[in-house]
Amino acid sequence: MGKALGMDDAGNPADTAVEQQTVIGAGGLPIAVYERNRGAAQTVLLVHGYPDNHSVWDPVAEILAERFHVVTYDVRGAGASGVPDGTRGYRLDRLTDDVAAVIAATLPDDRRVHLVGHDWGSVQGWHFVGDARVAARIASFTSMSGPQLDAVGDFLRRRGTAPPSVATAAYQAAKSWYVGMFQLPALAPAFWRSPLGRRAWPRVLEQVEGVPAERLPDADALTRTQADGANGVGLYRANVPAAMRSPRPPHTSVPVQLVVAEKDRYVSPAMALCVAPLADELVVVRVDGGHWLPLTRPERVAELITEHIDRLDRS
Image (cartoon, rainbow, N blue to C red):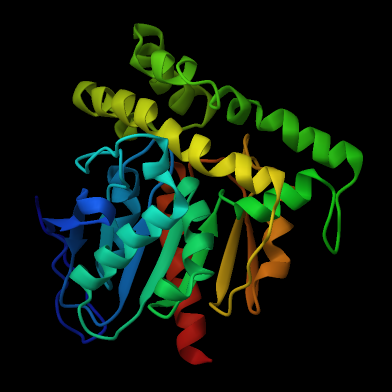
C-alpha cells in the first residue's frame, strides 16, 4: 500500500499505509483487522454494513488517516474474517464480543474509540453503545443508515413517544421488503451466488446508488461480495425477528451524531429519526445523498466524523 501525508494530532506526518492483523473474536472466530496511522492520538473505528466488507470504508479511511488512527475490520462472515457455524453465530451479542476484541487489540490502553457505523455496522453500533461491556470504550458514535432494531420494531408497530402515521409506517415497511425475503433459508444466498446476482450488484451500485465507476467492485472484489452477501443473510435471520416481536429499545449516554441520508432507498428519514429518544446527547445532520454515502460522498462523511469529534473536544 502507498502512503499519504497529513498531520496527526501531535503535529507529526501521518502514515496512512494499511497494516493488517487477525484478532480472535467470539467463539474463537478469526476477525481480520486493518489499521492506518497507529501513532495518532485519537482512534476512529469504522464498522461496515451488508453486503460489504471493510473495503467499503477505504475512501473515508484514507482521508481520516491523515489525522486519526483509523481501524476497520471485516465483520464475521465477511471479507477475510471467519464464517460462523449457523445463524446463532451472527447474534448481536457475538458481534459485540468481536468488537470488544478489536478495540482491545488495536487500543490496548484505556483510551476510547470514536465509533462510526454504516448500515448493519450502524445497527451493531447502537447495540454496542447500549452494552456496558463495550460502551465504556466508546467516546462517540456516528450512525448512518442503520437504526437500532428495537426502535425500528416500535416504529413499525407505531409505538413510542412520537409514533408515525399509518402511511409513514407502511411506506417504510414497503422499503424494507428485502428483510422479509432474507428470512427464507435459501433464496437470498442462492441469489447472491448466482450469475444474476453477480451481474446485478455492480449495476445497482452504479445506476441506482450513483457509485462512481472507479469505486465499483472489480472481478475479485465482486466474488468476495457474492460470498459476503450469501453469508451475511445470517445477520437478518439472527436478530430481526426478536426485535420485531418484542422490541425493548435501550438507552445510551454516548454522544451520538445521526447522519440522515435524505435519498436513502432503504431507510426513510422518518425511520432514521426513530432512534432520537435513545440518546442523552444527539446531533442530527441531514445529507443530500443515498444509502452508500461512504462510496458516493466520502469527503463529506469524513468531514462529518471529524466535526463530531472536534465538537466533543471543545465541550
